[in-house]
Amino acid sequence: MPEDYLIKSNYLFNLQLLAGKENNEKRAQNPKEWIANYCDSDSEKIREYKKNNYIDEQHDLSWEKIAEFDKSRIKNILTKLHKMFETDK
Image 1 (cartoon, rainbow, N blue to C red):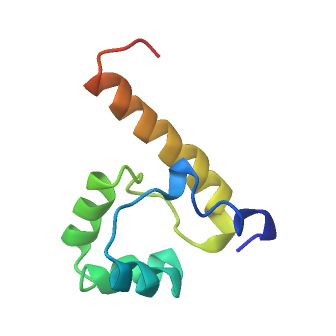
Image 2: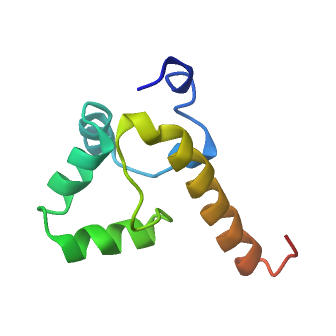
């Protein structure tokens, strides 16, 4: 993971509500591996997980692409919030 992202663990792009044990397990793995394990490597479950968590389906979840993930997920979350609260972008 790029050094500048180590301090961004509480930023919007990384927001997800998980129980303590599950959160610690997630923290110890790279995102691509964690999602595959969490979804039992089932491609449909992975697709649904990404959809439900505002992650672009085709997005590469490797640490090298964390900056792109950051921008993409923030955009997706904000779009959803604007829709929910019927605000203009």
